Image (cartoon, rainbow over all chains, first blue to last red):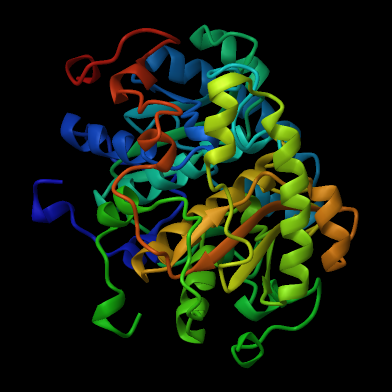
Length: 220
Length: 220
C-alpha cells in the first residue's frame, strides 16, 4: 500500500473487475501477491473464524494435471447443450490454468475454532460464505494492482484435493488463476458473446416483500 | 459515483470495513442506497447468472419480528458456552436490527437461468458463492459511502422467509442491517474483546501443497 500506483477507487475496481482467462506469461511481483493475499485475509468472517487458507501454486506439473481435470469436466459440461448453444459453449475460453503464472487454491477449514462458532449456530454455511467474501476482496485487490483473476469452477473438488494433499475435511472453495491479463474487457465475456444478458438493477431489488417492485421512490 | 465524496481507495475500504451492530437513527439517502445495490449487482456470477435478489425492508413491524427470531436463536446459541465464555457471549451486541433503518434480505434463485448453468456443472454451490461475492461488494461500497453493514447470521432462514413471502426454493443467504454507524471501530469487535485473535497472514498461506510453509521468498 506504500505506492500511489496501487491506489484505485473502490467503485472503479468493482466496475472494471473481470473474470480473466487470457494471461501474459509475466510473473506477479512478491509484494503485489502479498498485498492481494492480505486483502483477502482481512475480509470479515463469522465468529472471527478466519477459516480460509490460500495455497500458492506455481508448479507447471500440478497446473497441467488440474488443466487435464478441467478439460474432462468441461467436455462433460458441454453435453448440457445442443446445436448452436453447444457450438458457442465449445468456442468459449473458460480457463487459463496453463497460461496464468499462479494458481491459487482457496479452502475453508470448517473446524478451525472448534465445533461452536459464534454466529454459525443457526446458519452452518456461514464459514463457506465468509471464505467467498475473502475471495471477492482478493479479486478486487488484484484488479487494483492490474492483476487478473479467473475463477475456475469447472473442476470437481474431490479430484483436485489429492493433488495438493488437502485433507478430506477441508473444503476446496475455489481454484483461481492469477496473472497479468491480456486485457481487462469492457464487459463480461458471457455478456459480449450473448450467452446471458445483464439484468436491470430494478429487476433484482424488491421493496419490503418478495417480488414487490422497488423504485428509488419506494425506498423513501 | 458523481461526487468526489463517495470516492474511497479500495484498500482503505477493505481495511476499515467492519461488521456494524450500533447504528444512528438517520435514514440512508436514496442515491446512496442505489449505488450500494448497484455495486452488489456488478459482482461476477457463475455463468453470468446474477442469481441474487435484494429485498429492502424498512417496516418496523417486520424488523421487530425478525429481531424476536434473532433473540430466540441467540439464546439457543449461548447454550454452546459455559462460565466466563458464556458471560462474555451474553455481553456482546450481535445485531442492530431495530436500530438500523434498513434491513436487507439477500437471496439466491438457484433456478434463475434454467437447470444447466455454465460453470456450475461440477460445483453446484457456485451460485451461492456468487451471491456472497455480491454481498462483499455491497459491504465495501457501503463502507466507502460511510454506511455500516452488519450480517445477522443468528437467524434460522426457514423462520425468516415466510415473513417476506420468499418461496421455498429460494435460498435466503443473508440478513443485513444497513445504517449510519455510531462509529467504525479500529479493529473487529471479536478481536477487541478477546473472543478470537487475528491469525498472521503467513499462517494461512501455503506454498504448492497443504501445510507447506509460504514466505515471500518461497513465492519466487
